[in-house]
Length: 387
Image (tube, rainbow, N blue to C red; front, side):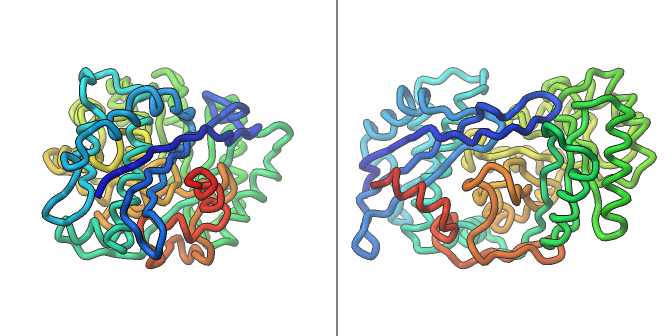
């Protein structure tokens, strides 16, 4: 049993939308296929992966460093002999050979993308949905019902409050009961008007989360906190620079409601520093670490161990990214839910065909691996790469 080929292609996921920090007019994503020599139904088992939106495709790093380390490793050194399968942790270790600690930046995205594909292949080899495989390996009861919220509310040329409210109403009509919008890309008073318009639109049918995408300095973050605490928000997200833990801690003195952050932290060491110094409160705040951006599930398991050491429950994690990999982890390891992009970043966002949101939750289909084969538009692109 061995990995015989690793392929990568960089795909555009461009859109005219913007948040408070970046626009997505030139955004790309890496799509990878990990081809094994294991045969199922007359065909090789292929695992697929891609990186989350907001970070660009990492084809250079994948092709120049990490792919060759997998392919040049002794195939026996990558096996889980006890399970007659590939061992994702050993593949991860092979990828990270000769890499210095720290400096997590872009390489964490490259490794996370490949790690996703490896786990997809591993679960397919065992002919199990990844969430059930994870639950079994960690002695948990798998829960196929997962909370999801609808992420959107981006700034868009010509998009007024009427269009914003129509977007949010559309999410409610599709079964979501938590929706998220961007702030910080306009003045405080303009954002206040946008928030009030959405709250009026959704009424008691849903809750609203807001996301500043790390834009604010301390003074602005406090000013928004004082404004936002007047509203019943689901959370106030990523207020300042993700590594400014002192700023994050200071905001907790001005904002008693729930806060969320972590999508731009890329290692278990970063997670540890956030919990040490960021003033995050385990009774109300949310952690958004995204495995596809932070070295993959192998590293995410280390992050969950850090959370345990600091008295945090996995149920306080709702990952960023809106992809099926985090959805599988949520169902298999007891996370609090997952982000969802009903309309954006297609074909990578969303769920397998036929999966519907009901009262803010989805039920996982019983598809082997991560379930990409159940999403017709996505698997078509993936199979083009594999063939």
